[in-house]
Image 1 (cartoon, helix red, strand yellow):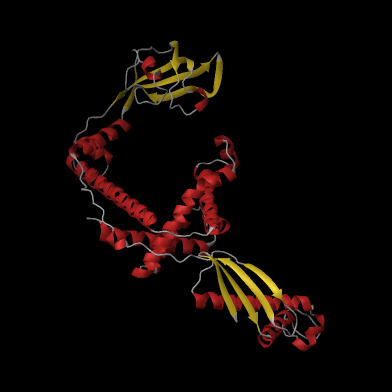
Image 2 (cartoon, helix red, strand yellow):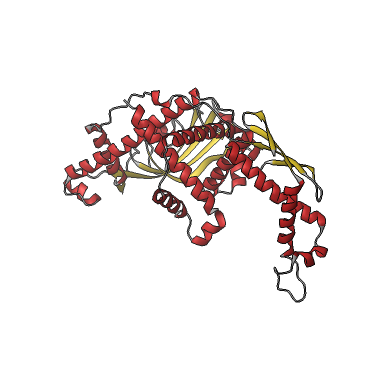
Length: 426
């Protein structure tokens, strides 16, 4: 019925020769299907007998429909029998087709490649001890206090830790630079919010004072074209505000929420930071495991699968830029001076790694019989849908079946990694 030829480990060719008798059956099915579209007086639509509809049917249309039905059934049965998984729509070539004759065609398709998995049960990674020190808790308390500082205008020279308001202009060779000037900029003096050296020059200035000074642009400045150049800086100090930090005590703790005293706040901070560190450690172990798996497992990945993943990552990027970043993607490309083709080339290594990781984790899931529950998938899908403001917006922007499949993959991968951590962390 068919012959299979492996063009490569990830690409196959299936040649089909369908006997005349079998193709005639599909031809009859195609006639019946198309006859339902014919309208004749005395018959309801869809009830016209094939014999009466036949004169109104185009033979080439019947052949095309018969070919479609034959190809679908035979290709599906072949990939099931051969245990193949096509990556995308295959290339179909019809070699011979005519009424009351054998039907010949071939299909060329990229498929998920077979590969030898490394011995993942031999992975051993040293688990780090997780603890939260007293000094960490004190630093977090200090940070909370910093954010709740009271602001008070002062009539004295600017000091480190003051909240100041300035007008700022940077020029090189007497030419102002776009993006290097601003008015009424607020920042905390000494926190490193400006070009290195500027804040040191603001320290000691008085309210409404104007100051000019020269500065070499650091080699790590975001604008490469002016790195290392000498610039003239103009500063006008508009306001000086002292930041008065609250005292860290029982009253401070009670003001933050449902805390009886400072000790209960510290306990909550410790528990929260401990949870964060556990997640960080889990992430570190996952990365080490993934790096080991990808290094020790060789897979001949189809380029079509990599292209598909690049498109997926690009869609993620567009969503983040336009929805979260509130910027048109075309404007974003102009800002970074790139086009989509350059972005796609840059995404290729990441896409290739993602595909490889997904194939490896999926194979481990099959071996270990790891799969998500219906409840887990439903919860994941609902979390994704919550990103949208309404059901209508969700329908306009997503394919629910794709979201369900995506959720299954994400949950399965997470469960596989949890399993690998449980057997490899020592």
